Image (tube, rainbow, N blue to C red):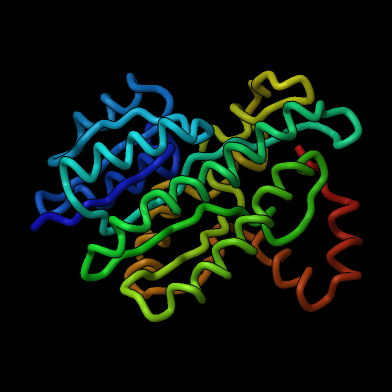
Length: 257
C-alpha cells in the first residue's frame, strides 16, 4: 500500500520542495494550501498526488478535508504542517487582528489539523507528524513578535503531544529553519496585514530550499525530535541557550530586515 503523505503550504517554498523529495510511485502526496492553481502546478510534477485545497484557519474546512482523506485513503502516514506566514512589523504597531491571524495560521491551524488527523495517523503502521517551527521559535527577534510567539507555542504543544504519543506508532518532529531561500519574507504580514512584498537580504542569501528539504527528510527518517536548519544564524539558538547575554548583545546589533 502506498504511503500517504499530507503536506500543507505545499504550493511553494519548503512544502513544494518536500513534495518533490517524496515524489515516487510508492508515495501519494496530498497537496494542501489556499492557492489551488499553485497546488495543481506542483501536482503536475509528481508521480502520485492528490490536490486538496485548504485554509488551515477554517476549522470546519479542516474537518471536511480529513473526512475526504479518510474516504479516499483511510490512513495518513505522514502529516507535514508547513502552512505558515511570517511578520515584518513592530509589536507596538501591529493590529490585534493581524496578531490573531498570525496565531491562527501558524499555531491553531497546525494544531487543529493535527488533532483532526490523529485517528488516521494511528491507523498507519509507522507515522510521523512534522511541525514547521522556525529559528524564531527558539528565540525572540525584532519585527517578529507574534510570529515568534506562534512558533514558540508550537514547541510547547508538540513536545507535550510527543510524550502523550510515546506508546503509539507516531513520531513527532519539530523543524526550526533559519534563513532559507523562499518567499516567506515577501509574503510576511505588515502591521496593517498587507504583504511585505520585499525579499529580505538575509532570506535572499539563505540556503537553497532543496537543501533544507533534504535535511528535513533525513531528520524524519532518523526520527529526530528537533532539527535546526540554516546557515550561521542557527548558532543563535545555541547562544540563547548557553550564553544568553551574548545572544542579547548580538540581536541588538543585527538588522532585522
